[in-house]
Image 1 (cartoon, rainbow, N blue to C red):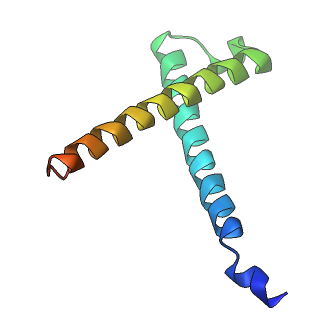
Image 2 (cartoon, rainbow, N blue to C red; image 1 turned 120 degrees about the vertical axis):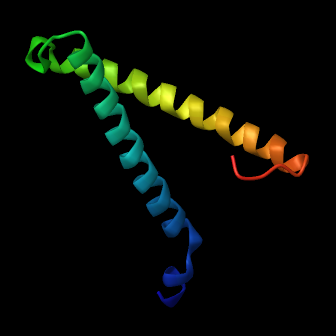
Amino acid sequence: MILDKYNPTSKIKRYIRKKAINIRKKAIKKVEERIAYQQKEISAYTVQELRKLILSEEKKILQGAGWKGAIVAIGAMFGITNF
């Protein structure tokens, strides 16, 4: 239908999908860095272990984003900008 073009839910879903991909990429980079810091090879881990490490990093990134959003909101209340 013509109204499907103007449906905001598809735009919102696309935006969320892009953010999720970016978060996953950041988490993978951090896991790779952590493994390199431990002086191990990625092949030393099983697929299940790597998935767990990536999921834990994603959670950390999302929690950090939540705190950053809260700090920006509090700063905005007091007129402080550009964090």
